[in-house]
Image (cartoon, rainbow, N blue to C red; front, side, top):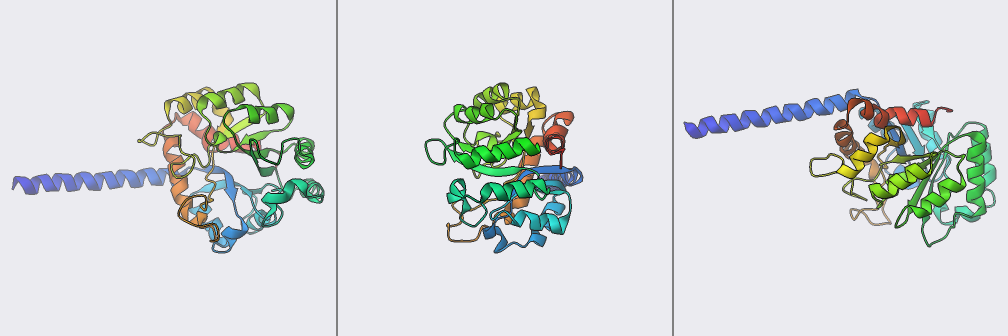
Length: 301
């Protein structure tokens, strides 16, 4: 009899836990979210339609989505089908292999200028750099893209892989009149590195996409809350942080490079991860990170 009673208590506790989890998920679903880092690339489109992407975003109550694509025009398809809450930014990767040669493309700047001038695009990026490898940040196409961003007053999303903050500091200080989003909080960089960037460049915002356990990691503890250094930084500079999901999955070991990218099948998983640590912040700061900062950054759209 005692064993039966104990089983009943355990079972009730389990049901209560499930109800609590569902309530949390329901709360997330009711809160608007601005996803600052989304891709819809050619290898996504092979297996995930634009309609499917839009449905996944709506199911998560993502009400503001900044989209970069390879080739560039695919982001426009999402906006055409979904409306103004999809915010396309101009990717310099204008064809399937554009990441390899964008910095030598003589037609790139004309295309970017036209897209920004007619408000087809509301920013520039994602632009990738790796310290010690080409392209250099002195590349004429990059300099020209930053000039266009300054002229049209739009943000630029920049991805840098480096060992510390100096490489990125050189970029943001050289282009102090451009609003810059630092992708993935620098990937492997620490809160100490990011603090130097925030203090050294008032034109930079930090976003946390891909800092999940399956990719860069290093953001949260086993309770899915921000590690102490990151939490202190967000609390101190709440208007400088935002996040996104970056649903690109081929970088993991689950797929080989000759397969289509099934990243959109993982959207809810990535979304839930970020909602957990955001939800553990004070409410006012949650609002900044979850959506207010993103709206402010793209205020010219």
